[in-house]
Amino acid sequence: MTIRHHVTDDLLLAYAAGSLSEGWSLAVATHLALCPDCRGRESRFQALGGAVLEEFAPAAIADDALAACLSRLDERVPAEPPHLEPARQAMILPQPLRDYAGGDADAVRWSMVGGGIRQCLLSVRSRERARLLYIPAGESVPEHGHRGMELTLVLAGSFADGGSEFRRGDIEVADEQLSHTPVAGYGEPCICLAVTDAPLIFRSLMPRLVQRFVRI
Amino acid sequence: MQPGEGRDPDSWNELMTAVADSRDKEAFSRLFSHFAPRVKGYLMRGGATASQAEEIAQETMVTVWRKAHLFDPKKASASTWLFTIARNQRIDRIRRERRPEPDPDDPAFAPDPVAQPDREVSAQQDVNAVRRALAELPDSQREVVLLSFFEDESHSAIAERLQLPIGTVKSRIRLALKRMDMLLDRNAYGERE
Image: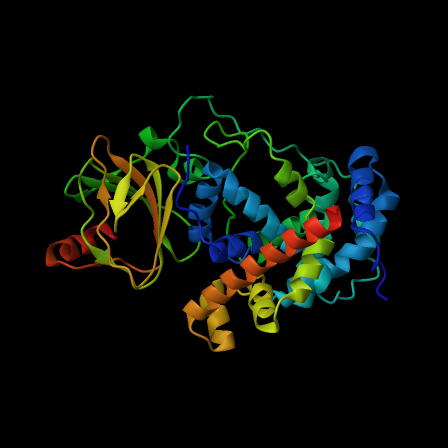
């Protein structure tokens, strides 16, 4: 699997730094699960975090802090329960996405959006909206723009947008300037993770009416 | 001179390894004296109150003890590993969000290609090399990189603070990181010659 569309450095740095909020982080982390190259870059950015830790002025720590910590070192800690999951081949959703979706793609509880398109909203603690989208083969998502950023990560099938093709693991980073009409590839349905920080703005009236009911 | 300054990062790695392999409390105490105040400083810089930062710094150090077996000096230096623990504590305790992370044991996880000599080199991107590269950046670029570690909702917050358009912040970050790559690669070659 060759990934051609990677997460941008500014997002990857924010993720490594711990200042990227949860919704965006979900898209970045899922891309990282599928992209060894970006994981290599992320480890470089984490080393930058190690440098930052050394760079900033230390703050005075309480006199009894070390003693307090030492007294806790022999405490028995209940072992974390092992993450039990039946081993299966060819899973569509990598971790951490399965935790958010409640299982692999076949366990997702889809709701209809119209035009054969289905979605499942995922619960994140930050203000972004994260959802899985299921787009039938050859079907297009109505043209839309954004007030903010949109990250779209392909998990199955493919989509084409603005002359580029996106396949499993590829991520599209779209901002306010981009109004786009992603079209799912022929042959198989496209499943993707889409994260936005503002409701999508559809260009035609029809989807806007639908929008009120389905919270896109 | 700060205590610990000028110390070889390898010696922090050795102390971490002593904690992992022989549960060495003396080694832990020395790591504590160096890192606990730095973790506290990092948390306060990130918006924590002094008492919150004190508590989380202590929690971070106890977590370091408990998770020491996961420390791998071939993958990251001690400072970097400690940073990731402090960062995760900050996300969990201050921002109260989860940090989604890939799981290397997941069957859907794409493994690293087997032979990767370059990765070995970049894994020891030890903190000193990165600090040197950071020091060589122009001030305006160093500033946005450092702010990335503290401003939540990062780009818009950084843009607001520096009174710059958000696009300028993003492109400045990308430029800074490209330049750091260049500096790190150049320095790595320099050291090998």
